[in-house]
Length: 307
Image (cartoon, rainbow, N blue to C red; front, side, top):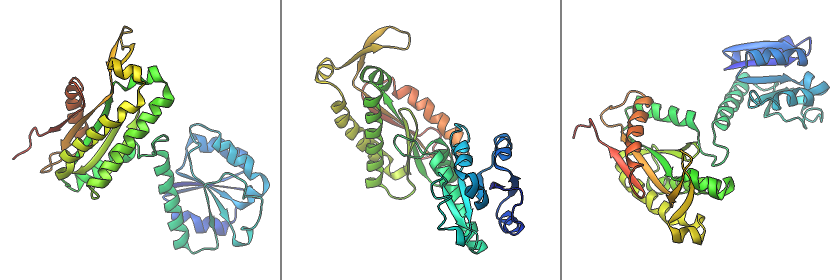
């Protein structure tokens, strides 16, 4: 973990000696405004701000980072002495957390590790569904592969979502995405508790991971629930027509049926995969095929699996 400490011109040497061993890389920058361009050139994993900065112009410094679209996610942690806890000079600033520098090294290290992990997790969480995002999904699948776990990885895609979104608007589309996230999450939770993850890659693409013995039941349950719920998002007139009329990718107008769901499944049996990308490519091939079928479908890839 790489850290930058921002302090006044004379940073407490005792504080520096205390904090430096806690990080792989530790840099001290003095002067708030002078430090900001340096951080932008080589962003750390975490920003530490000494109480001396917060007492003088803390809100302005913190806001400078928070307003930046690229670096606004970096966790900002205040270093506060026990005697400064009740000071009002830093309590209104939008910091993520604080550490009392009078604590033991073990306590401070543990708190910093928790703060850093939380920042990574929050950054990779889908803002709409609050499900883990692509980086978390990849890490989890790769970990399962490395451990030799016999899991099923399922890529879920909503068919005809874009024309629905164009016709009914983003708000209704977001409702469909949140409903789909709940359907998948609840089904996975009810059927399997071990070695499971539900993630939201983005848009109308989801992923869920479960033990291979559960995959067929899960796919059938998710499809059943989705097909039952999805009709509630359409107007009666469109349901009577069997779908909506909207523009296709080539600009022409045509009918799009009520949304369905396609689930492409790969199995990590017998150490079939060594890398996440291999599983993803196999699933992409399957998804291309089943998305061309009518209705909601799932397919489990058993190519190359010894029976």
